[in-house]
Image (cartoon, rainbow, N blue to C red; front, side, top):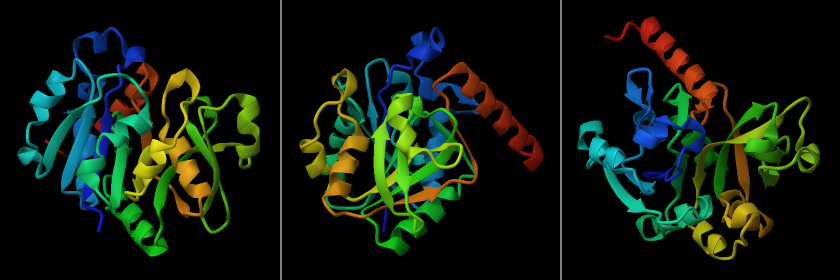
Length: 256
């Protein structure tokens, strides 16, 4: 059973300045709720009960808003990443929180709909008896993301983080790439591989590199191709698109 999650919310949000000079990017509203609340609703829809949120400096508004999580029907905890040392380092801060369990990792600036996608991801993970399940969506430009190669059975057989056009070419599928969409289920064994991960570009430890080490060591990872809508709200363009989509959803469903 997958009951725990780590949410990564330590990023500065530099592409959303000057808004993020005042509030964390995860607190920017998408529709009527902060982005982080949409993230937590996705996790809750998949049966998650305990969430560790990794925050950075100037994230006090985020902590104050979420509190213990009781209002959202979750148990929420916080831990500080004091330096921007990468996603693998951020996840490693939850080692003692997770232990040996399977757990979800989700980026705090993701907007995903429908929420119940998480339930389907958990079911696939359990069916495949996978050591990791990566949620994927097609993109036209792979340079901002981690992208993967996947066989006909859905097994991941290669991945790379934020490649150049040249590096990305072997990962191309038809006319697009499969992007790791900021949502995945991992086994607690990943922490051993994070310890052995070499720094990548900019000296950061990237979670995709840790996953690749684990995969090459004989552990099966599978992809879940996401058919809903997903935006990371790290740019003004994607934030606007996510906000428009959420307001359309509210209007269609008649929420008050």
